[in-house]
Length: 187
Image: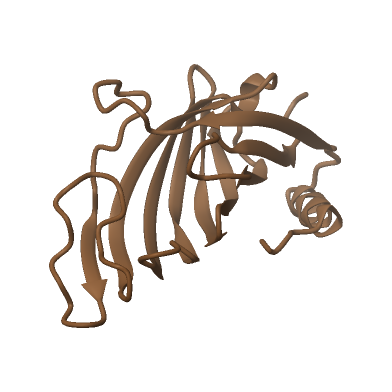
C-alpha cells in the first residue's frame, strides 16, 4: 500500500510558510491530471534523457538499449540516475497548469518495479512563472505516487506548492493530481 501524506500536515506547513512571509494568505486546493511522456516527437510530452541505467545483482548484466523500462532482467535491481521526463499538468486552476519537467533517480526491483524515487521538478506555467523544488515517491505493484514540494518564481514569488501525483495503475493510466499552494501575493 502506498504511504499517504496527511492534508492537515500539508495545510499546516503552507500556513506556517505564509506566516514566515508576514502575510495572511489562505491555502488554495487544486486537482488535475498529468499527461505523461507518450510521444517522443512531441516536445511537450517527451522523454528527452533516458538517464544512466545500471543493472545491479547477478552478473550485473548490461541494461537493454531502449527509452522505457524494463531495462534489466528479473532477479536484479534497476538503478537509474539523471532521468528526465517531460509532461503536462492540466488543471482547472491555471496557476498549476503547464509543462512539467521531472529530473528523477530511482532504484527499483527489475521484475516488479517496486522501490523508491527521488529528484527535482520544474513546472513552467506560461505567462505566469514557475514552481520548482523536490520530488520523491515510491512504486508498489501497479500503484505509484510522486510527492512534490516547491517554491514559486514570477507571479508565484513567495508562495509554496505541495502536491501529489497518484498513478492508480502506472502501466495504463495517467496520474491524478491533488495539492495546495499559498494564495498568490496581492490576491
